[in-house]
Length: 157
Image 1 (tube, rainbow, N blue to C red):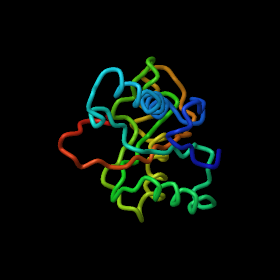
Image 2 (spheres, rainbow, N blue to C red):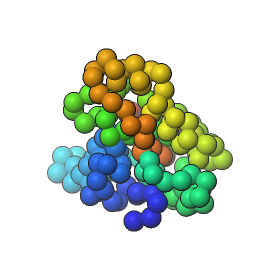
Image 3 (tube, rainbow, N blue to C red):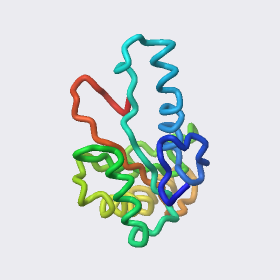
Image 4 (cartoon, rainbow, N blue to C red):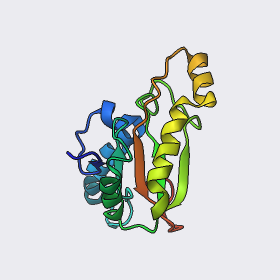
């Protein structure tokens, strides 16, 4: 495993990928099985390609690796999404608390990863954490996902 976690690394631990990415990894691992067992059309279930940048990765030091991973998604634009270990785990949703940015051009991906990371310590995040009685650690894994512009596809699947 390099500094980014690919969508094929389905056993990546929650601590590295966060709650949202953990769910996407599980969906990605089931994608072919769902197609074969539930749907006859191969295009019914599609999880857009993605990778995760764990919170510990230094963006300046590993910018080239992140850019290489970005190119492997073969997309024109990207969704850059939060994946805190606190969100989408069943206990607390954090819905709308952390930042997500859509239609990000290639040259802005690394910069946008930093913006999403910063939302882990935002005023909104701190207020919500206080309301539900948990402590934020300020660390945020971030998902970079191929943006899909096909009107037949809805959501992440």
